Length: 322
Image 1 (cartoon, rainbow, N blue to C red):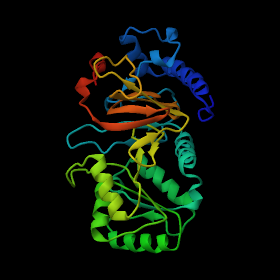
Image 2: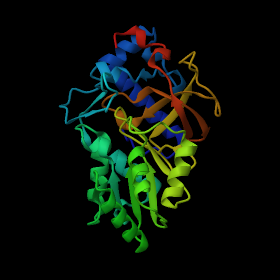
Image 3: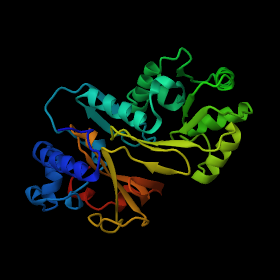
Image 4: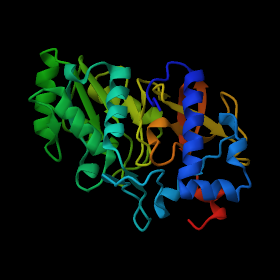
């Protein structure tokens, strides 16, 4: 299967249906879920009929479509007292190809950037897929200044201002609360830097709506737009927002919006519902995931994330012990 050669939706759908049949045959958990829904997977002939596995199953089951050895286990940070998600990855080369091609698709060659990473909450624990990705981007950037910063906010501010004034292209990727900490340390007026927030207050600060957060960050860094990354432990691909909170998927990733009352009903563009993700890079786990995020499509391959809802609202989870 050619996971990343999907130049149009017709080719994407063709590849996605091949993967669905493969996973419905080889993934025991996904197959059991489909069977309990009373669906004959052999009769599923288009994406709109494909069942999406509730993301909660990554907390309690090994989601695998292959018997190949596990190379890496990515885990979510999780909320205190909650079981973390586990993504068992049997082929790291697929993940690497996905995030490298994804970055290149939206931003061009990583070699043109200095990558400064401010991800303390992720860096302080093991098993973060985000840290794995950013570490690889840092190494591929070929800049001696690229690297992770934990609590060295003053040193980060100094190097950021110095490189930006030299006209170097910079990517500053950071967890939300740490970026807010940084702009409280120093005044910035950046001209050559992309600020990319990955979300997450982690209990460090009060939660902010996106418009308020991005206004604070835009003013604090002196930039017109704040970029964002939409990814999660259970996915091997990322969507990116280049501003205004509108995310776009790479060609091998697709978003559908489901009705929160009827999860088998797809909603039209502009309607708010649960976000379903098709990620072809997840070929060895499950490519069809019903997330706990609320959102709406705003155009072809474009969507907004509007919040989250409790897993008890997702029908289908009670079919199997989660």
